[in-house]
Length: 135
Image (cartoon, rainbow, N blue to C red):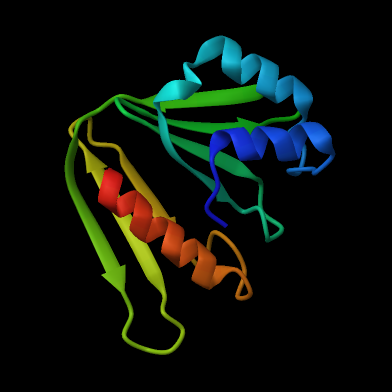
């Protein structure tokens, strides 16, 4: 599942649909952000029925993008990470949860089963562990 922004962009531009995100998203996103500073990205709800969120981890902020009825919403968090907790279950299901707490009192939680589906949970768990390393 782990891929770069440029791979995501190529996928999106050549036909793959990420719910309601399309080519217009790429143009707008690149107008607003310097893609050279993206360290990781996380596609929450790509494989389930929930609303897709794309979470970008930059060197100095986290950006969560959602598509609302007629527009894109960009939520930025430039707060300093004050703590992060990684929970990994011992059982065969290998449920993984990462909780990141910021100095502005906001919290970001990533959960492999909740954010995907049982078939993709292992891949999401791997991605969460990689984000834990860089956040």
